[in-house]
Image (cartoon, rainbow, N blue to C red; front, side, top):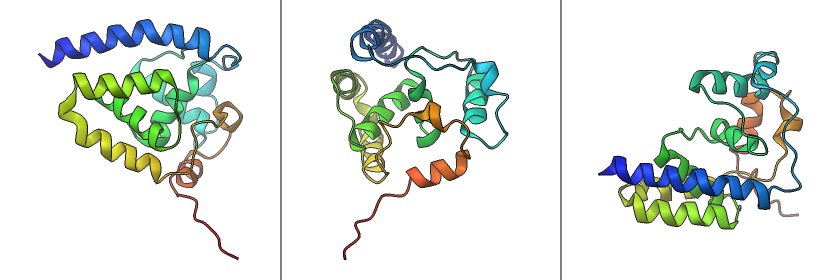
Length: 161
């Protein structure tokens, strides 16, 4: 039964992400790198880690959606469908809000409710991270991946003077 529910979600995602890219990512341009070029970055860089991610999973870059794959690396969220939904909860907790994200969150809860606890943990994790959902990760591909990840995973604290 879960297999059918996931197939339904995959169908919905496939149809909606094309619309999302067309109408909500209109002004965004696709990255100027290929998966192969990413593998040529310095070993400890974000670019190299992203290239290795694509190679390991057999994925290709989806134009205008490259940041999504960086989010997987930064957050440690897997690529199973329930992990994809958890990542949307994490991004919601991090401050991101749009129709596509809300649809994923609602459908995720309705169709895969057995993962609700995981979703809520991801939401709280997102709240405890520095806001990163709007970052231009293409400009950061040369940065040390571990330093970048550590920086994002530390919640900014309020400084009182």
